[in-house]
Length: 327
Image (cartoon, rainbow, N blue to C red; front, side):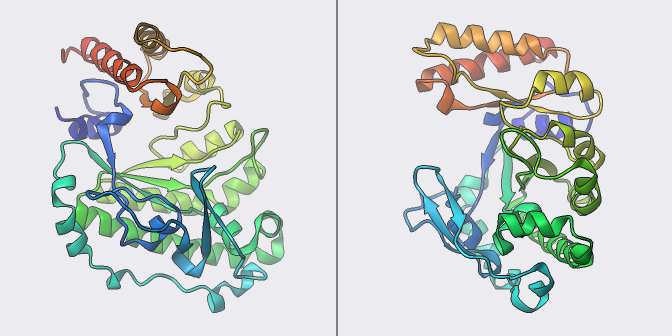
């Protein structure tokens, strides 16, 4: 099996040959998509050398923060969500030269790994960028704005599905990440009830449409959001990496028979990491999740020298192939 085939088999409940690894994917975020430039998230065949930040989707201005390695929205464009139909301009995807992008990146896209792209940003984060955090948090729970928010989220879902269809059609994409942070380091931004009522129906429709296209869907959501995981599972979502502050082992024990979690592989709490220590760590974490269907996300920036990351990947792959008889 190729890494691409193995990932699809894993998520489709078919026999797979090793637990998938983050190295089994490549990221494709071409510079022709304004949102990727605005969010400082361009990955393509030729290294991107242009500016970061600027005008993204819906005429939202973003500023790149080098220290954070990402962008922040500069100024809300709505006073309240009821204005969205009058003030929001949805991107015209027909004006993008999709075939030209595919041709320009042909060698990069000719891969046996799973091609992954991201949708910035999902629902609550998009509301924040339109209104400000305080206003978004308040309006999300106000009955007066419920219909407006549902209409906005419905329109966003239509657009996100259309965008995903283009990536599937022109780039043969396999994997889509939808980005929507739902919590702080201490708790979720909203109650499970609000989350289930206002966000999950739209996320469910997006996930269902992606599955019909043959896409695997990853929820990229930071924060201490353990209480929202049952809602996330109910949406049909395929996987979620989360942050280290969430007790992934506990969550896998609770929900691992219903959901395929991504497990973060990070040694950021250790110093002076050697290759031998990296191998020991990789074997320890593999054994910890050996009897569960999990996807290992290796965070190389947290593992010291590149050779440590390579050693971790090698152990995880070898153990997986031994376990499933593909060695």
